[in-house]
Image (tube, rainbow, N blue to C red; front, top):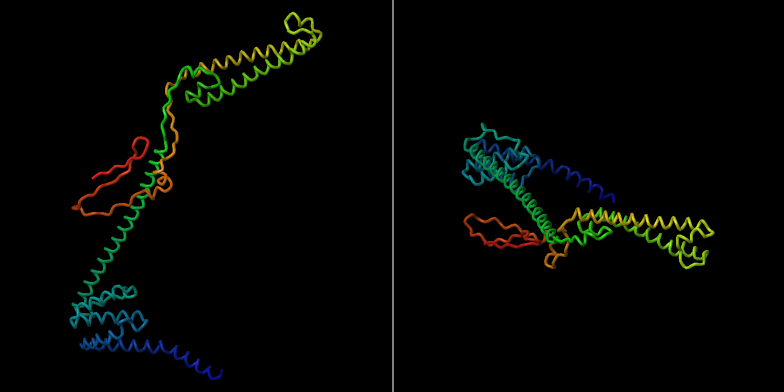
Length: 336
């Protein structure tokens, strides 16, 4: 264990010292290349700077790398390697860290500055064209999404229309003359029909109930006391129980009043149905979809066809399939 510790310490010191040595070597290489360029030895300057920058920069110093690229680009121009010069100028301008480091136009020949400007303008045009393509792609995507949404909503509306069935019913005045709100319901006046149905039903029930009470309740009691089979107005004064006489009279009057009121309400219902008579009544009903359209109802997007690809203006237009509402259902139209 004690032998390993010195080895580890030496290794750590070597690792810490390596970047400094590498950085010092990169700076020295750059200075040698610049000196060769300033001395007019352009081939040697290009060779030295290529070793520093290619295939990847040997230094992490951004300023050093940017300056080295400028001299390498200038060296390529002066050795008449225009393709390599343009590539290096493109790398220089494409590097975000080098964009703030402008080219010193007084330090380089006119040919170098001219090539640099040409590449810069070309890159700017490419960036503008790429930005225009990106915006156009975004607009096309938004238009496609809106078109898809509109197509799906249209198909849903068509499916909804296909599920609706318009039924026209002819009315009759004879039917409108029936009680218990039948005429109102046939005319489409559901609220009024419900009112007359409940009112007439309750009144008819009360009338029938008072009749049953008189016939099977009061009458039998009177027969029990009088010993006669029938009840007549001449018999009541001879009855011993005045309470039965009063009960019979109240029940009979109540039944008559209820009967009259029931008749009046029924007559009012018939008059109302005849006054507001509707000869024909239209009603929208839902009907089941056919089997071929059930998938459309479950997933309208799956039914929507894909948008056709754009074709040149001189190309021949092919057949076109469209979906449209027709009557009470869906229609398909094929055009050439």
